[in-house]
Amino acid sequence: MQSRLAARESVLDQTTGYARHFFQTRGLNLLLGIAAFCAVFFGFRLAELAVRRLRRKGSEKKFGSRLTALLFHVFSVLGGLGAMMLVFNLAGDWFLLGIIIIFLFGIGWASVNTLPRQVETIKLMLNIGAVREGEYLVYDGTAYRVDSLGFSAHLNNPRLDGGTRLLPVKFLVGMTSRPVGEAESWFPCERGDWVALDGGQTGRITGQTPANVQLIAPGGETVTYPVADFLSLHPRNLSGGFRLESTFGVDYRHQAIATTEIPDRMKSSLAAGLPSVVGADNLRDIQVLFQRANASSLDYAVWVDLKGGAARLYPQISGAIQRILVETCNENGWVIPFPQVQVHQG
Image (cartoon, rainbow, N blue to C red; front, side):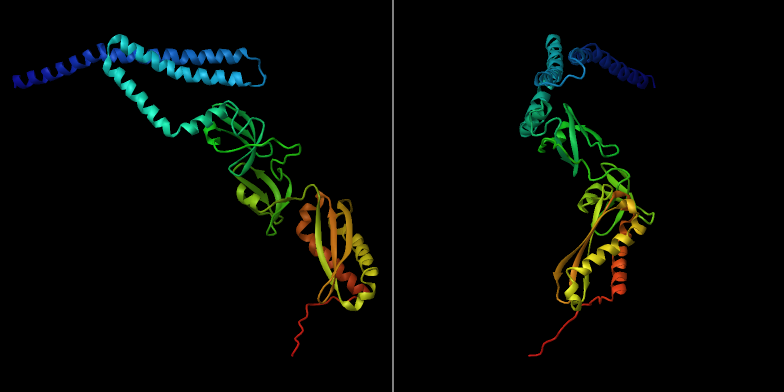
């Protein structure tokens, strides 16, 4: 029993002694090396912060200031590693020094394959790459203005809710930007606008973010589209005004008055009937023009220009135009043709 206790005490003493020896020698060297790294690393960072504060606020970033910031960050890491290696060398701890050297060789070897990408990243940070500050960039299918470039990229779309994105500058490698146009459209619509989409869907925009666009249809249902899907439907913004185009035909028996009396009466009827549908203030212009002599009818192109206030009635207006024209035909005794198929037997 006493021999077992003695063996346990011997093992405990050996473990304690090894730990004490480690912390007095290699552990102390490691602690001093980490302290040296932190001192140099944060020293460079504080110096970079002081230089940045000395630069006038609101002044434009120049190449020199960007290069200075980049060098401060690079030397903060390299200088910290150099200080750590110097401590290990002075302490004669070749084991820890060898580990640092192997680590650096590993980093260098791994960086060989990614060197072109790293060079492009550095060019972006210095604002001399394919993406430049203040220019137009399409990211994830959405347009953005590049507000700033550095170790991170600040992108902004003024028309989107939450349209500010902050991401590592390396994500922009391989992309290109262009100068912003004088009347650049950052998004087809804004919150509150009425839009018409391919496929016949219409609605009022209630929210638009970099992720999705939400609109309320005339019936009250809420429809949500991912931004890419929304843009693929070629949204037409109705809030600034819009034109509705329609085609209407009459029978060939009215050929004598087809280019004179008929279009004039159709226009007069639309001018009298549409204000009760869309409101007199929302009606801009009406045009009824002879379009073509079709196979079984004489066709007219009907153009109705409206203000944005009539956008909520967009689905109803086309039907109202056709209704008024049919009533005009009934009042004047004009025949509305239907498609005819003639079979000729040889």
